[in-house]
Structures are given as C-alpha cells and as structure tokens.
Length: 145
Image (cartoon, rainbow, N blue to C red; front, side):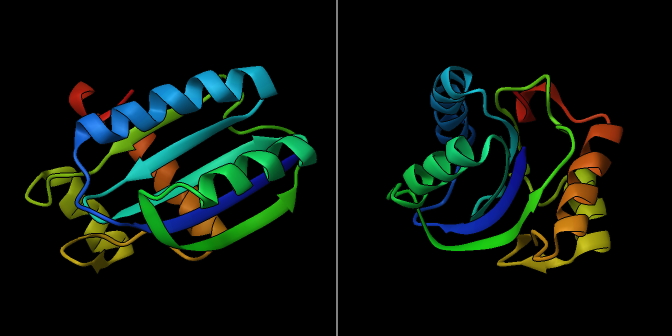
C-alpha cells in the first residue's frame, strides 16, 4: 500500500462547480481501482492525497499530471504505508475558496498564505496535518463533498 501527496497550481481560478466535477470524476475512477484519497483546493492551487496499491496510485497520478486544469505539479510525498488514512473515501474534497472566512484565516495563520489564499504545505506531515485540522473544524457543507 502506498500514499502519494502532490500539490499543483490551477491554470485558471477555481470555484466550487469545477472542484465538484473533479471530485465526481475522481470518485468514479477511484472506486474501480481501489484508490482512496482527499482533494483540497483553493482558488489557485490543488493538494491531493492518493492511497492504494503501487500500480494503481502510479496510474492515477500519471492521469492526473496530464490534466490541463493544473500545472507545476510537485510531489510532496510518496511513501509505503501500512494502512489507509482515507479508507472510507474513494475521494473526498474540500474547497477553501473564500479567503475572508474564519476557516481560511485560521489556516493561513497556521500554514501561511500563497497568492491570496491558503498555502498548501510542501512537507508530507504538514499536508496531512492540514487535512486533519480541516476535519476537526466544522467546515460548511458547501465547501465539502
């Protein structure tokens, strides 16, 4: 079992309908390949965690890299794992899109800001910490799927 974490820059400003479409497509693709994970998006960046068998994670990541909705893809972490952190989710996601919100402000205070939004970490442990912080905060339903 493997976990890959990457971050990337969106090629155009993101909004919830775009993120929701990505989550829907990922959910369908991931179920058939036993991939689980989490997608976090701001107006300008993505960060995603993908878990599964090596071949499936690699194949999924190679498909993601070719997606024209983003560029500057950086692998934050790629590790062998003993178990899934996101086992119940073929793909879950949260959009941190409103930089004036209390949640976005809290995240920017803790993790920094980038291009007016939340900075997604380049360290695997911080990336996972951010996701767990979001799960501990009451995130509005309009931000998650």
